[in-house]
Image (cartoon, rainbow, N blue to C red; front, side, top):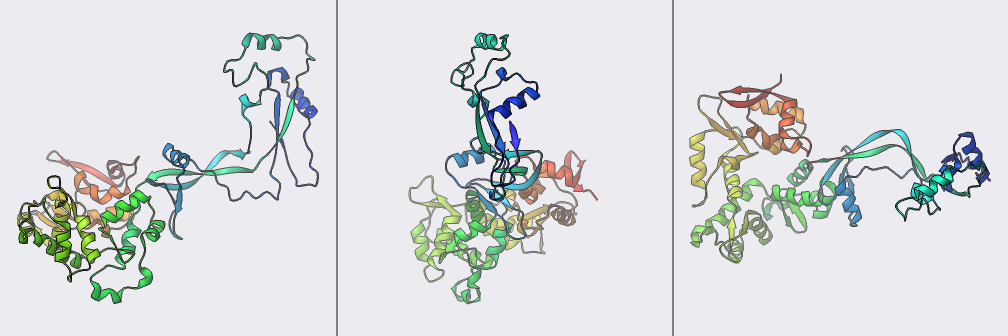
Length: 424
């Protein structure tokens, strides 16, 4: 292909078929071995607007989203790194240089489409090699090859592109925004700045994650919709309402999987707004497997909010005392399990007496280096299972917890158990 610089002159020079033949001869090429169509490329003129075009690398998932008519969203605030979101995944976006220049040429034909000969037609699949060899071996050097010349305008030239790497959703901003307007009862709503209240769509447009991940994030924060805005509840208020809801189990002699939704909402009328009770019920329960139209409280969620009430910041509990207190505070039939403390509290066995204490994941630094320092300051050595809930948010499909620990900590083995300690 031949390049021609367009200086935006009133009448720029246009290549002719004779020019192409001369260039082929100067290049000492056999024109009979070329297809009959030549495309002359012309650089974009000054009046062509193309600075709004960017080259983006797509993986199979993003490509499929586009092919099915879905929309990809770029998200990022003034001081945030931009991410790209599909309906299901989130990608980190970084600019990367291209070693060569890439030209964007609309309607450019590729090799097979430039042949008008049945010998090289893309429709036949296989060329007639014997007939083609006869033509190439012809002794007539002056054999005239018909040539068609088409002009192609280069729209823009790329020297860099955006590469995308799948990452975990960034929920920290969601939590920070929701914390500003915690709901603690209708009597305290006068304290809330209305401009800090956000709808579902406003938060979705702001938080750096896909729609599916956003819905999952709302579930993790136990957020609900109230008066058209997404809210989380003040912890003490939430615990009080949940305690009243759980109390109805014994009051009504319900089995754990026979909880009635409408009866629960009705019983708390005048105590809490109906949307709050209904929202909490939907968060903390799931449909009963045994009883149609009945529900069952999720043991893990109930156990976690009860444990959070016991594990006040700064307090330490002997392991056996904490487990006993925790179990007594749960409804009959529910059990406390140490895995329910994931990201909420830790079991510290380093002292003479093993103890349990509060360590909330959302209150740790959002930078991996600062978080590792905070973790090792809290506790000298950790197992992989203990460390996982506190650094899982930094993992990606290509970066596991083990890989992160190999980079930011050092390991040692004591009594057959592998621990991780600070590098410094």
